[in-house]
Length: 131
Image 1 (tube, rainbow, N blue to C red):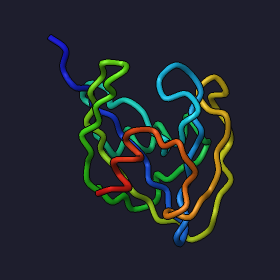
Image 2 (image 1 turned 60 degrees about the vertical axis):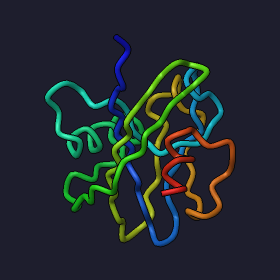
Image 3 (image 1 turned 180 degrees about the horizontal axis):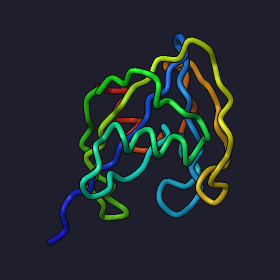
């Protein structure tokens, strides 16, 4: 039976800006998304958020206080995929540079005002913006 998977997205904030990347690859290619990935078996969502952010951007937030910031129900009709995406937020006191650590999965990382993220949006980002 096809069951939903669990994704974890990192909402990295500096003032009114958030870090987003333009996805590369078959799932959501060219769309903008928060850093994140799959929750592994037995893994805590906060540990997953910290791990994925470090793996994808080389940004370490392990010393910051995370905020669990809701979830979205994300259905990818074309790919026949269903995710529940959990959001873990970190507030920064200074903007940091994100490195492209997985060049096969991301074209670029950029900071944008939360109300002015370019399109197209990855489905979880689109759904998050409508929470």
